[in-house]
Image 1 (cartoon, rainbow, N blue to C red):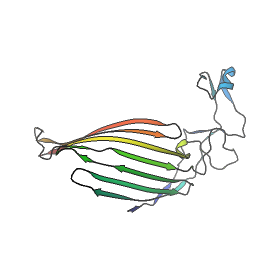
Image 2 (tube, rainbow, N blue to C red):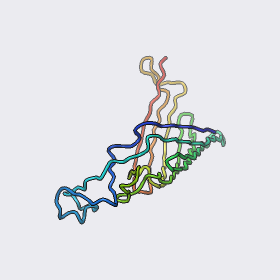
Image 3 (cartoon, one colour):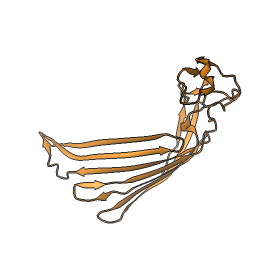
Image 4 (spheres, one colour):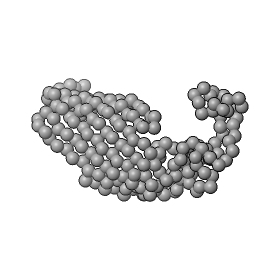
Length: 203
């Protein structure tokens, strides 16, 4: 089990995040004829000027609490589980749950499929495009602070050479790990990412 207390202090807003207010007239540059289709994919020649950058509090208290449980099923399969509940003083709450199942198919090779689920509520200061108000003290339209859920499916393979038979001079190859993940978020973000790692031992 674990419990963290994280206190952030300083400039926590991103000056590159633009905000468009719902109670302020819009201003555009470019081809005025394209203003009616500004939010569509067909717009290529008109740009709406932002009303402000995002403004967020200069402090944030984050509290995650959770647990890890690993279970050895047999000499072939084991389970690695993880759960975390998170909340902060910006009004966000989230749940994270993941499961990884290493499958040892030989002395050298291990497969490990995995699954991760995540959901969160929106921050108190989030509102979508043209729904923030200029009279508010704090505001953002960063969708990382919006309400959403996400799923991640993963698959990996690991090669381990216990006796480091493969050598290059005094350097022995201990293991190679490859992993692929597919990430899908409910507000439209999707991603594919992969990584490969090598572990060496110097005699």
